[in-house]
Length: 317
Image (cartoon, rainbow, N blue to C red; front, top):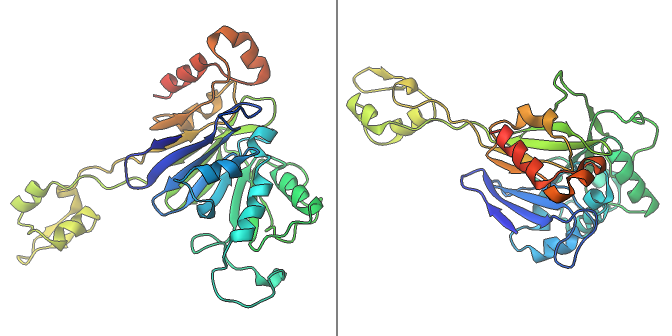
């Protein structure tokens, strides 16, 4: 299932699985991929069987996945990740022709030309989960991975790292309870807590602002000729004409256009704590495990109805 975005930076969103709890004959458990203009793919959740879905999804290449964002550690959202990492390791190509021993800790190079590590973001215990599976299965990766946990799990130094694991990062929330994951390739990533039975998070990914529209007629009236000077003004640089007159971008370029916002939520019966960050979303992905006739079942199980999802969408505009 594909949702094609319009614009330069967000390319498309691919739903690899939307089933709750268990797979069905026609739908797998949770996983989605966002394809970016840079060629990178960011994955949100990775339930069991996601590798099969990737093979069926011609629009998404497993080899392009650079980052995985886990909403929570229920199995239908994360059990596929260790296996996916191992499969990626079997087909991954080094960034150079180093002949070093393939299983030497000194042979690691950058994951690709954009990222040093294969990056994973998730709730507390994410690092322990991945580390444990890789250790007990005697798995080895030709690249290094790094986990960023949203909050501290209390076991940062309790266990030895896996041989392919970079030291994990631990983020603390701001005064609103939001986690500022960082800015990657211009995209600002913020995570916020959701109401569920275990620690669960939603992610807000915002494009960088773009420059305003260029008023060519106004520029022409001021004496700016067609050509590179117009491009410089559009890019935010002042230009000086042969006459000596300097034209400022503010004279011919409109105000910046706010970057579009994608909101990806995990399982939730209460999304209110991420509402401020999600305000003005261009796209919202919100679960609706139950319909209104089963509303009494939704909240005790940490889930939403379609009506609740629609209400949240309306609330954030």
